[in-house]
Structures are given as structure tokens and as C-alpha cells.
Image (tube, rainbow, N blue to C red):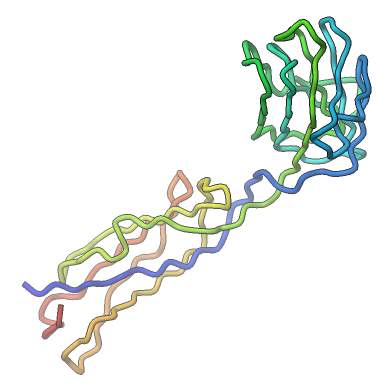
Length: 237
């Protein structure tokens, strides 16, 4: 039985707007319940904000304007929060809780809070319980806005060099991945067959390729159907 090795070349165009971690917001200012809050947003990880030695304590970062925020990084010193909330506001008065953290570990710690997907000008860290008897202490607070994903790679299953029996039908599924290696929806996929083998016949080799079908998980499925066996004379494998 003759067999034909073939590969699918899938060219994908991003068709769904997703929001991922993007550019770091600069020019931040900060206020706090106590201590010098500016030291937590001075872009210097050797200086730190330290609060009074009591609970609760808070620090508010002003982004300067409203941004679509997706990620906040808190670089804690050893005197950190055991329990705290991360909150967001557009007016500096009415806050929405984005995340509640409890029983967090001691020591120097970096907390990354992502997938926040909120529009805000003010980001508040509200400490309700300390890990040590000292005040809350933060080296630096970083805030990142949302940005569009970039298609960087694709996973095609089964393997694109899959050997396929002449005359048979096979389905291929392509899943796009972004710069964070997260799935990204594909649309308007174009499919081309590459047949790199020496075909010992003057007769053209053709194959039927279905229209790409988008799947619920953002992947795309394509069906490839080979021509009948008698159309193919001989191949070197």
C-alpha cells in the first residue's frame, strides 16, 4: 500500500481581541495611611515604604489617569502582609476588591496578581494583618496595563509530519499560542499543502481541504481528504 508523507502549513490571523499583560505604567505617585509612600513607586528596589507598627494600614497608587489594568506586582520586604486586599477605583473614593490574600508567607516575597481586567486610576493595597511586629514594608509596586496578544507559535495535532494513507481522510487541529504561551483564538485560517516528495508521475497530485472550522476553545479544525489511490502511481518514501 503506497503511503504519502505530507505536512500542513497553517497561516493564522488573530481574530479575537484578548487582553493580556502588557506595558508597565510609569510616572506613578502614591499616598499611604503612614510612612513615605513615594518610596514604593520610585522605580528603585533598594528603597522601601514602611508603615506604622499597627493594623490596618494601606497604600494607594495613583496611575495619573484611567488605564485598563491587568497585573500588579508587589515586592514585599520581610515585614510583609499576612492578610491583605487589592482594590481598584476610578475616583479614589469608591473601591472594588480585586483580590483577597490570606495566610501569605513571611520573608522577602513577590506577589504577582494578574488577570485583573479592570479599568482604574487608583490601586489600593489594604493590609489587615502583618506577619511581623514591624509595619508593612514594600520595596516597589508595579502596575501593568492590558495589551493585545501576539501570535508567536502554533501547536498542530496530529503532528504535521504525520504519515497519511493515500485515499484516507484526516483531521488536523491548530491551537495558537501568544507571547505568554496562553491560547489565542484563531480565525480566517488559510491552509496550504506542502508535498515535498519526488512524485514519479507527470500527473498532478491534488488533495481536498475542507474550510477551517473554528472550535469553542479557539482552535481551528481542518479536514484533509486524499484523492483515490488510482490517481497516484508511485512515490519514493
